[in-house]
Length: 358
Image 1 (tube, rainbow, N blue to C red):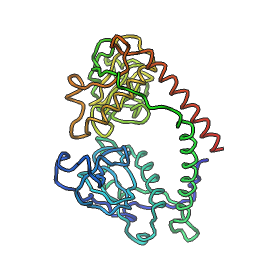
Image 2 (tube, rainbow, N blue to C red; image 1 turned 180 degrees about the horizontal axis):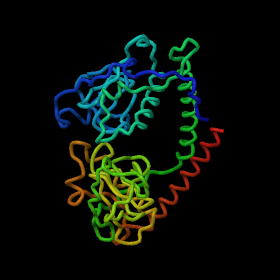
Image 3 (cartoon, rainbow, N blue to C red; image 1 turned 90 degrees about the vertical axis):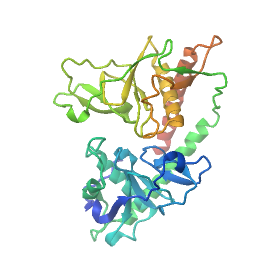
Image 4 (cartoon, one colour; image 1 turned 135 degrees about the vertical axis):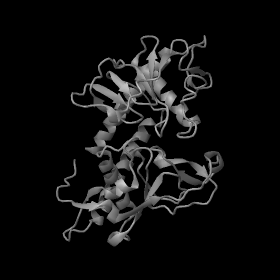
């Protein structure tokens, strides 16, 4: 059920938190990050709670604060429960004022969601940066008690209840999926995106969202995002510029959504650093979904946002794993069957979760 917030109070974020950059080492990633590192490094990423790797350098922050990136997107807002190492452009939110000592882990988690959702609605992006000054001026709604003070007990109990539900759902998912076996890829081969029977690589529309109009929007606009198939908005058609066809695929070349790959459901334009994959044959939807997963996995494993991105690799040495036939060619039939199976399993997961929610 939706939460009724009509009686909640309004608070300026800057009155609750001092926002300033986290302490960072002036080192390159190669010098900072280590495979045997033990301390998390919070970077400008919207994945894995912002953890971009681990280091053996001493922590610079004590944790129990909220972090966000002022150079990527509002999806990079996270609560950090443990000590960590800061990073350039990662801002920390440190409780201040009359409520300074009232925040618990659960109430900070509650605030993180409220804060992130409010920021999403304000249209921050790569052009309209989500700066600490902008964050401090934001007005957010929070539950209040009879004395018109922030109701920390409400937030505490709400997160506790949600945690219990989440544990039930995770247990249901685990019990449903624990019989699945890991896929053996020992006999798979690597392929280039431009290989035979794969794709033509088009560098995209390279449009600036800030310069687009939305009077009679009819064309999807795909940016460097990982939600909603990368679709950030719908824009007006541009005279003389035909949109790409539905069914083509997009890949984000950089940013924290590095390698995000989607099958587009409707005609679309793209932003800068988003390429278009045009299938060389009538490729089934399930095959495209399989490839999209493998492209994203390869990108996130071997490339680094803002350090070693896909721009200079995508048409040269970028390759990814695919199952093959006895002749060494991509096994399209296997990919299609496998994704149909996974889609059906996902539907089963949702049905079981919904059963527990009720």
